[in-house]
Length: 492
Image 1 (tube, rainbow, N blue to C red):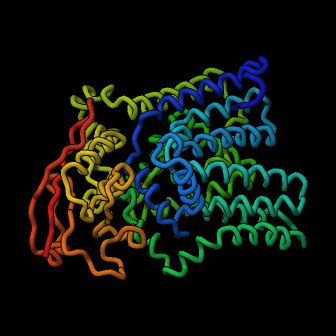
Image 2: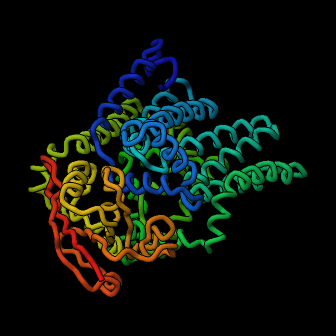
Image 3: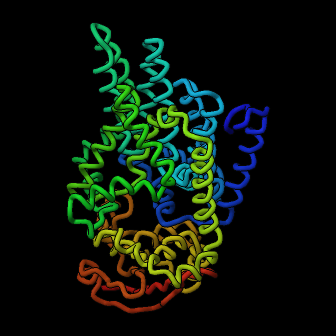
């Protein structure tokens, strides 16, 4: 997984270590149900369009068609791409002059960071974005060394794939474009820039067409995503932005990466610096202007700094500490998702458990109410049994909800022939919105599901004046707080 030699230089031990870690990864995800966002990605893949994360969604659609309703198989592409990403980090470090042993430490720090481990274990666009972007960086490094036109074309193709994985890939493409424009002199600059940009635009064309044909509708509807209402002062937003990656990587690794940013600026390493600055600058504007802050949004930009972060020859104790703290994060969260009962007692006596609410905007609290970190951890549990209880209790009418985890999880785990829709959530206008233009008239009766305490929206009440509470069903698992859902039968 990490190369042919271990960190101390012995032969083949790293391959064995990689196989052990791969086995641990497969064991940790075995039996873990889809989380709410995973269910969204799966549902979106079954109603595929080019407006968001086209490459990951297309792969998940294919994988589900090959072996339906198997979580481990659905997650397998992310696991394999995680192995590829680790190999590309090692390759990038070696190309930038790191000694073999130091490159292995840098690769281990990458592979055992919580961000890498999670996005290469579960359904997440970053699991596809990271290897595509690393491939672009590796090819750009080779292009800088050889100035071969074909390498600039290859860099553009890989960068275009990164855009198809996630919107933020566009900021990375801008960074590479600036690197070519500012780092190449004379007549060669124009042809090299064209050799990079034309393939990138060609590959990303389906997403760009989908976005411009809808007036950039979807990016605008995501303006509440990860918005923290409690941070109103620009200074508090700036500080939270700077330290938000700590939710995804260890403090020591973040220290090294920020040190790499400073070092790249001093060395004027534009290829390492400009992509990082473009993505950091873009999301800093979102953080200061709209309060949208999430640490993993800027982490892809820091990948270009990975080799630079380790060129300062960190002391051995620091390298060990970076890898060890990352591994502790991985085990703590991985075991928590698999065995949430590990944390039930701690969560019950911790005031920090309730701090999760402060990180969610008012709009998103209504769309997906989770009131504690323990509930967030348990979002990967109980859906299979909940779907079975729903099917035993409810008639096969269309099921609607304002809380997106309910219809999407039931669509995956349920086996009844039923239609699923969202209500008052513009993010799903083109995939699951009940009010979107439809050929057939709205059904005479529907089911509306909501977490207990939620309300039937006024728009539905106007359409369906008759309302009856017909069931209250719990989603439960040992070690998790039980979550109760009310199901109403609505009719005209």
